[in-house]
Image 1: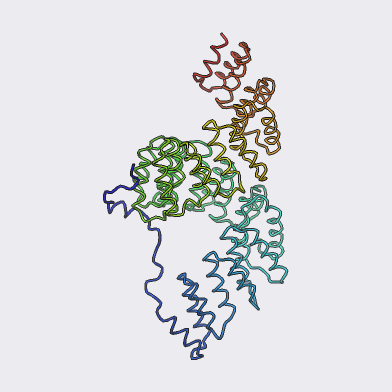
Image 2: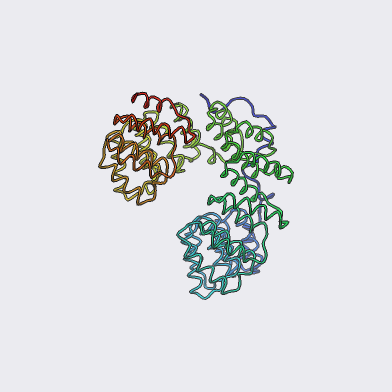
Length: 558
């Protein structure tokens, strides 16, 4: 099946698609080499003129040329170095930026903030906070921009202690009344999961704007407090503060968490009334909402009505069709996506690979793999995991293992992908061997890892390994997960340990149909007809619909 359609793409479709890149400079700056020569010979020693040229080159991404000009400047100042450092920061070359920073004889607060922003932008929070500590030791007083830049990289729970220390410094310097800093603090507390501190600061703030409310609403939504998020949105309306596209996106997330489709539809009407429906960011959020609530027709209708589309729009609608089982439509949209000018690295390769895995379509999987290789999207960990899963489900374990060997093994994700693939194909011994290798590599599994490994242990009736996994799951707090619980229950039942299975079943905070099926099957296997029928009655009373396997289990006891 060809992924690229040979038919000509319509002008209409192209006009709806936001371009991937824009031309930032309308004419070529042809005089910088001449000016550099003038500066070098001393004819024009005006540092401000040289700095203007330097800034122009950096702004247009010509950092190498900017560095050549910098080396030829007879007169430099702190601004010259700050400009060059910012150029390397934009390129992501933090090592070169740090070398220039370390070579500075005089560093201003701007110098520290630029490099700090580089660490923050490139997801290196530890480096940013170390630089902040070094800045304080040097006696440089941070300003409000420094704090806003530093706080933007706080997104880990482990940073809570460091964050409170920074907060104390902010209060000491009197920046706790600055709205920009307070907004950054609220956002940082929300991202680190300390909502109590975020809410306390929010309540104490004298002035609030849409950014303040957005941070709190997003924080509530991301931490599962969806009703709080909706309540705060109403309070925001009462304050007369106009919502932004970020506000609407956060509230849509809350509607999604509440699993309330009518509420989401009402909110959609409000967005249309507020004239934000044409915002691609907001429209994408609604696409995601409808796709995840089995309203794929509403999602497609919205997609067709959108005046502007980006790569996210296509990714969401394609994923929605895959979830809905409408594979032909997802393939057609993926073909259409390839005629756009979007960044091909951002294409939904992982989703398309999962489609190929579900359909056991090796030909399609190889075509997607080829495109991922061309765009270097295969270097993305999610795409790599999807490749492992696809090849394994297509019985190509050699290719799956080769790709697995190239993936970083520091996290549980690639291990889980290959273990799950082996388990789904019934290669339980190999799955258990991989799990042991993962443990030797000091990699902790996640809930999906334990669920798959327990399934392997159950089918091999490996009770000793099952008990070890049970102990680790208790330590890591995975017992509340319904999939881990059902897998553990199934393992004990298949190993003939009915008492342990009953204990796991009774301690589960929530149960799905798989749990009930495992428990009914366990009683039936033991020949306890009374318990089997009683459990079946409890299943009916719980509101879940019994399937054929539960009925078959009960019939064996009659």
